[in-house]
Each structure stands twice: as C-alpha cells, then as structure tokens.
Amino acid sequence: MIITLTATDWLAMLTHFLALSLLAVGGAITTAPDMHRYLVTQQHWLSDAQFNSSIALAQASPGPNVLFIALFGWNVGINAGGGAAAGLVAWPYAALGVLIAMIGILVPSTTLTFAAARWGHQNRELRSVRAFKQGMAPIVIALLISTGWILSANHGTLATSWPLWLLTAATAVLVWRTRVHMLWLLVTGGLLGWFGWV
Image (cartoon, rainbow, N blue to C red):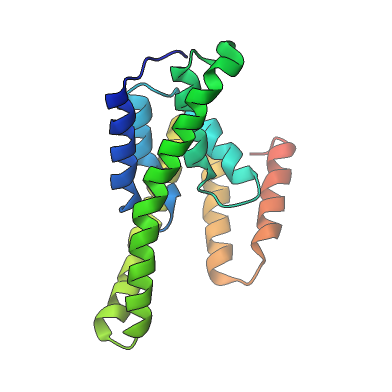
C-alpha cells in the first residue's frame, strides 16, 4: 500500500492521537475502534490487514500492549515511504510514524494520569472519588467489547463463528466466577484453535 502524506497529514495524525490519548480509559486498546475509523476507513492510511496484524503482533509480544500504536505509526510511515517494496528507503518515514504515534498517545494521558492519581490518592476517602472509580468499570468493559467487535467484524465471520462466541462467553464466566488462572484459559483457547475446533 502506497500513500502520500504531507506535513499537514502528519500533524493531523498527531492531533488525532493526542485527542484519543485523553479518551483512553482502560488503556490504549479501548481506542482501537476510533483508530480503525480514522486510519483505515476515513484516511485510508492503513489496510484492514495491517490494522489487525498490528494489534495481534503487539498483543502476542511481551511488553506493554500500547506497542500496537507504534506499529500503526510504523505501518503508516512505511506506506508513506513507498510501501514495503521500498525497503530501507521507507524506514525514516516509519520511524517518524512511530515517533508521532507514540508521542501523541502517551504524553497527554501520562500527564493527566500522573496528576489525577496523585490527587485521587490524596483524596481517596471522598465519596466522589470512590463513585468515580466504580463508575469507570462499565465504561472500560464497553470500550473493550467494542474493540473486540471491530477486530472480529473485519474478518466477516460474525454470524458463522458461534463456537468462538460460546468460548468467549464461557471464558468470561470462568474468569468472573472462579479462580482459574487466566494462563490456563489462554492455553485452552490456543489448543482448541490449534486442533481446529474453534
């Protein structure tokens, strides 16, 4: 995929990530639906495959899950530098994409989190602080569900993948109601996929 980005486009990407950073309640992954809308649907800077593989690779690798943002920036930069066929010529663009994406997503939320956490810790006994913490849980869950919906909808198998929906529901109930370690659930899901049962 080859695209052309001007300085205004790079600035627009930075501005969009700065705004999303402040909406990243529950982590950067909760902003994935809007990133898909902006990067894939609206701007056409990434393909669906690049979007999904960036998230999958970041989630599979050790380290913070915010790495998918860096991969979005990398892929936008590679596309702006002439695509994968351009080789090393595209790498400076890719580095610029990573820098813009990571600064955009990290600086506002980190600053706000630091200030709010200090204030919240000093005022943790206030009723409003406790209510705010309890009220954020449903919002985070809804944002995570919308992220999962966007990622699964890109494969076009929502209606035919009832075993996956059943496995997801069973896993959610097990996490909620039992003390089964999540690694066992991940291993079980991986084995079911490896054998082709889901």
